[in-house]
Length: 288
Image (cartoon, rainbow, N blue to C red; front, side):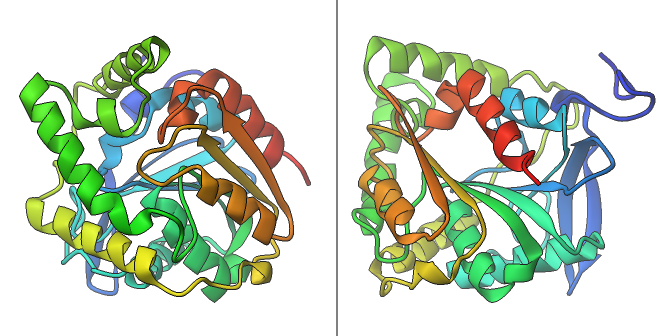
């Protein structure tokens, strides 16, 4: 399908979404958008080391069938300019700057992993900006095991190098037959876009992100009861990166939360179970 498909000139496939830029507060942010032009937009907040091409096209396209979807590179990552912050709080400020630079006054947010940490900060510092929030594969400040993300990432990177595999096969998916198969299918989907690929993250930016996550893991717990928005918390039942217990913990502490846990699923459970996750998201964001 070409870039002006389906509904007139509205882009409905992430594979064909144009990479654009917007400059605000001295940072040029790279982003892509697709889907419906009306309604509340859905902004995606991404994970450690991720660039625009790391979003599962089945998740993006599925949500873009009903909503305007916007993905972007964090400061200093991929095609965005600047120096990558070393705290989640600074990343949250950048995300707010980006969202407001597009003239948006309220958005829905789908956040994953590190993006979920960023989203929690935004929901507290700029609550009026978020209508509904999804926290997938993530955890609260001071959450169980989050300070160990660096060690796990380094260990799995070594495993991936020694076995000539992508590190996400180990970090995102279980080592069961189902998990291995789901990982291979996910990695294949990430390669579907052949034109206008994003730049990979630099080592300096990657280590800055690891520092930010480590600090988040060592931080004092926050009062999540102040987050009044409806929240959908999602994860696999065997998340090694951000232990699944954190998802249950957040769901208990958030006053208006639902929890969904996918069986035999790892950190990337929402990608492994995209066929179940996308309808759940559409129903959640579709509520008045």
